[in-house]
Length: 215
Length: 408
Image 1: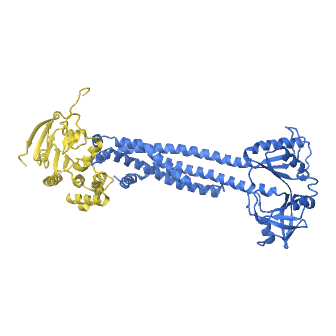
Image 2: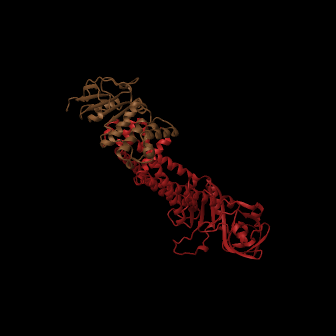
Image 3: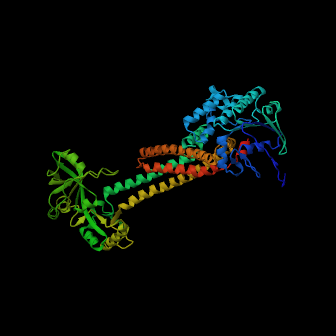
């Protein structure tokens, strides 16, 4: 490192079309997390451009980025990242709070989202009262509550046993079938196989980008 | 994000750590209760002083005889009446700052009327006495010039005397016997209420001349008087006039500047000032305590908010990832610190009220609750919350979402 500049991403040219299910694979340090952050509008590239729908994200300020994440993007994390003090419903309501929806509407949307991931009877449970699989489903409900165009899933099955992991992948698959674009980061081949397109990365570069014939 | 949502989220996180929240607000609690107590003591003292002025009149000096013991012979308090009406006239003439002087003689004696008996202080004086002492008439009138100059046997009585001699009946035009001398009652004074040392309403007032001729001829022979109340034109002149009266009196009584005087000048303002001074010292003390504890309390809030921001870094990242703007995060943490300080403020107000009632009950110290002080406490505590909560909140709002999400 020292004074040498480290490029997390180098010369990436990538476009993802709406409705796609893209798996990004790579070992740690391959740049897949940075790519994911840029796609998710958490970060902007130091050079080059990123367009999300009609927006040139590279030029947006932090407020606009927050708005974009709020309206069009949902995140699913490896460690669920639910707020421990809030129950399932309140966690799902969180993005709706920031979008300024009124109380009635956001509670309705939250319940619907929880129902759609099969947690209708767990709405008042706090994260520590839920199993890992249930927590991940709450976080998926949170991601979809604002009806986003894109869901970014960062190792969504990483903290789960394989059976629960498959349940989660099925939910993501169903969401994709409804037209939501999904970008999945994983290092497991069988998880990556859910995608219709698999991108392999190494040292900040795209090593391989192909249609998934197994799917 | 609406304010109610922010408050909802803030109270959630405060309640998850309720002991910490209360301990954090301790400084504010002490500060606010000190502020309330301080203001109450100040207001109480002011009201007490105002009441005293109401009772005794303002800008008054009282000159009394005093036995001078420097010659080695004490002649007993009653036998030395060194003040005379001549002194009074001379003072009036020499000192233009004097507005009026009410001379008086007095004795304590048996009053008989209506078959009842009552021991009261009888004062012989002039009409100035009523103005200077802030006396108001409930009924009847003051003396007429003719009554004063001829030594008419008329009397004005206080409320206590009326109660004991006439019960609730009007005493006007009734005859009372003072030292067996019959007097006609021409006036009834308004009630003033008692002080710690005397019942001011236990009084009978007659014309100076009448008293000197018929009641205290032996005690105050010639133009001797017991004391005089000097009313000064304005309060600014009070202390200067006190000195001037001393100078003039020494000249009249031929007493050198450093000799022992045979009179004493009492400045009622001195007493009031002392009272005000002591409550002022108390207030300064409390203000210091309040100031220090509010600042320490504010730093405590800042400290705990910085800890909270660090603890919740990941959470902040999550909120940002689902669309929280910088402003949302800033407001949420600001409201949290505001709530801590307001809770502290509320507890402090309750504590302050407790102290006020406790102290005024136990020490009989006059304290008055000023509603402004409650408003002031709210302003104080909320501004502390916002000022000291701002830095941590800004720190939270300026977190980079990626770093925050990655924080473990």
